Picture (cartoon, helix red, strand yellow):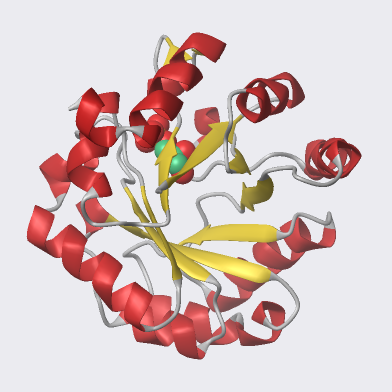
Length: 232
Ligand SMILES: O=C[C@H](O)COP(=O)(O)O
């Protein structure tokens, strides 16, 4: 079954998505961009909360912020998040620099921390970055959207291309995730491609992705992931 990655902005939201059955609790500040980062103090508090959950807890990830594609800048930001104890670190590969050089620069960190590279459907997904991520020792790759006002994933990327992304990444042994303003009715068509995770923020909130995350919305998405055909 495809898992639920739920992006949260507060410790209280962590508890809501954990209770709602999230498989990955993803620390992200949606008011600061597509991959907006929590402050280090907040990350440390979140790690402490996550550790207090003990066995059977969902996984924990965090984003490093929307960084320019400069290898040193990306490495510094990823190291700062990893230093807080977050076990899965997500970083965006934007189109404004040398993404392959950034991946290569992260190789030493990838030996110590599980890294997830996020590609953006609306900036053009280059499948060549998938083997580059695998060679750098990344744990996984996701597709998301950078411009949250520009439509959901399936409006920005053809189904064939989404399917090719998942297949290419899986063939390299990478964890796969899909996100990008997904709604409950995106779940059945995307679950067909069998990604490991679908990622959500906006659909979990009243008032859009910077609004209030609700247990009811988490339950709707969770149920649709359990039975994608029934929800279609
Ligand atoms: O990683 C998943 C994202 O936080 C998805 O956010 P979104 O559903 O608002 O595009």
